[in-house]
View 1 (spheres, rainbow, N blue to C red):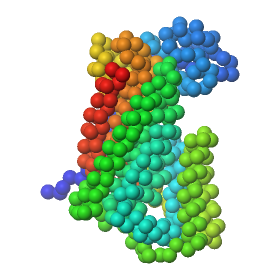
View 2: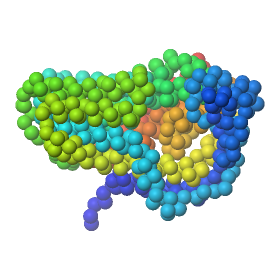
View 3: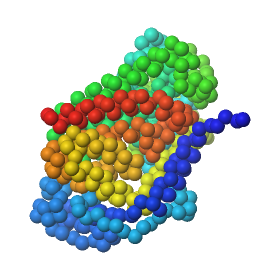
View 4: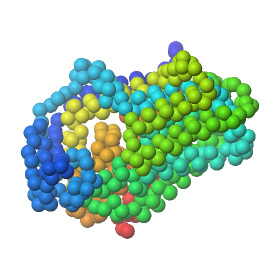
Length: 498
């Protein structure tokens, strides 16, 4: 009998999309009214079932709508997305998603996710150009000799630096650029590809989970909750340090185990296939780093530095990031005296290598589109908020964390989750007698914990770069998630009494 094989990432997402489509036939449709602020006219716009009305942009209007958020949060631009209005949930006509919507969802997702998909393809093009120069081989050879016996330093540096990016400016989608580059470095250090994936993905995940000054999660959530984002900051810093340390130790323990005995690797059966994906690992690793190749690696590395600086300091987004990698590719082509035909062919081939990853990102977006168009997200939010009635403080804070973990499957965007749920959820803290910052923490930790395994997030796209199955990732990550759940429960419980 032929052994059953775990389905590919694309198939997993299509199965999830089908289940979500079925849910839209079962879960009642409903919507909260939303409120948006126009800074040009200084007016609020209320959207209720497709009908828009306007109100004066004043604190009195917010008080009338029972929205306990200071007016300056809107006028300053801190809240730039429409927020849900408390006590306005109403059932609406069902919009179940059938076969037509199911088939169209991946296409819509690819169109909606075009920005990140194009970024991924251009990164692939740049990598293809650098690969053709031999610079990666030389760099890996140098790094292997430099770190010999101290390869664990690589795990600490990569995980902590990526986590630092996650906690400060929400480094997440941008990490897709790091996988094709850093994974062969970890393999050359005698680890497996899973260690490379873990350092980057876990670093980003734990950083965004324990955000300290991330404007796309903790700051926008605090603003939507009507509190200053610095409230609870020291606790979040402590949580960041504790959880990041736990993650680093967890990865190092696994890495050392497989370094001592490669057969202990969860993906040992894929070892040869994965190493064959990276030409720099199977060519001459004693290649000399000439001045020209050093310049190529410098330009390549500079692309990432410029990207991180642009996103964190200059409000760049996907267009600017993509242009940075394209410019880097052109500059490297000039440095290596590539003719026009070779450059175009090499760039296109590199982009083609990441086309499968791009499709996964689009299909995942399609799942979110089915949820939105099926009008079930607000219904789940409404009933989730009612679950906390009559709870004591400790149960409330921990239950809220679990609720946010559940909701994050249906609302995977951190900023979208903040503006849709905080005006509804944060006032519940007042009735229980705890600070609203605990609801902000519950939002962060709940979303963050589920993000480690959320198939509609970035994990499937990340795994697809080295063709690792989702089942193998679950085998690797679940013990760590369980540890982090216990740490989170302890932290949330102690926070009630501080």
